[in-house]
Image: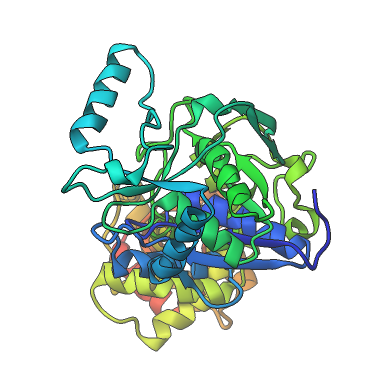
Amino acid sequence: MTTDPRSVVTRFAPSPTGFLHIGGARTALFNWLYARHHGGTFRLRIEDTDRKRSTQDAVDAILDGLDWLGLDHDDEVVHQFARAARHAEQANSLLAKGRAYHCYASPEELEAMRATARAEGRPMRYDGRWRDRDPADAPAGIAPVVRLKMPQDGETVIEDLVQGPVTVRNDQLDDMILLRADGTPTYMLSVVVDDHDMAVSHVIRGDDHLTNAFRQAQLYRALDWELPFFAHIPLIHGPDGAKLSKRHGALGVEAYREMGYLPEALRNYLLRLGWSHGDDEVISTEQAVAWFDLDAVGKSAARFDFVKLESLNGHYLREAASERLVGEVVPRLETQLGRPLETLAKARLSQGMDGLKARAKSLVELAENAVFYVTERPLTLNDKAAKILGLEARQRLGRLHSDLSLLPEWTEATIEAAVRAFAEVDNCKLGDAAQPLRAALTGSNVSPGIFEVMVVLGREESLARIADQGSAA
């Protein structure tokens, strides 16, 4: 494994045919961390050669997702399609050296090969019929593809930095296509040329690409180029061990953003999916950069667990600056209420955020818990709050309203003292006074500390909400 910081170059190379899914985000994170750990370079390449499926919206979603996650790339974004001429140039150089050849096999011949392979229960492999044949024998009307002359005996060995040595017999690798009949380069060719030209030293990607590495290694050798280090990381599975699907969490990064996860929480969680540092669970970005290396990446598939993600997110919410969380919550509340929040409502959110964030596990939950601070009177009660506010409780609120209205100072200490004194005189438990207060002030049976809530709402709003629900004895 190279540790020369001047030579480490990693890359993330997504195809813009959809959103930045969670597995791709983890691959990007591992590449980013490895580059940052070694003081190297992290590059971004958009593999947009599939013109029918590639869209600008998908490119924008990938860039936005990486930006939100804080995975900044170095240098300009490389677009693979724009480099097609360079890819074709290298294929033609292999033709000139006799390391590639024109194949004139017709669609009918290829289908017959596929049928034979199916009948024999084996994968389809091109049989090399044009490998050493004179192009003068080419049939009319067949536009040739260009194939690489792969070695036909021996083995290809990948010294994978995660998987260890991985071997395949060369007779299992057929002569792969480099240029299609219309002259366009294939994925295999484009990836190798781009990685070489981008000076990529470490190809870190999902282990579903491991079979590609054998073919790509032979192409590097045919081009007389030095191979990069390969590191194939296990895929992410669902909690049941099955391949990750949408029901498990195989969603786009933007979906996690909408669900109210903080980027630092998602980074921390993805880091721990397949990589470990002792028993550490909460790992800051600074620690991750200092600690990350490929020798701690496991060989087994990681299992996605929403419970662990929510727990981590709750931790990072509690650690986040309250003003930042206000900025995150305001747009969600404005969408929910269908109106912009007034200055007073935003001020209440700022003042009450410390109490709110202590109980939330997502920004969605945080916004839901904060609604009562910005809702106009009269409040709508949830079922449990309505049950709390029976006739006796309403009458008690009416009496308590009178005591609270006489307070000279409106602080947590003075309010709590007044409520305790009231409970003693009214011959009830503190909870018998506090729970109806909570229901009247928040419309719910749960909230931050009720005396804190009353200070945040202020004297006038608090007394008005109590009066809305209280009644004369």
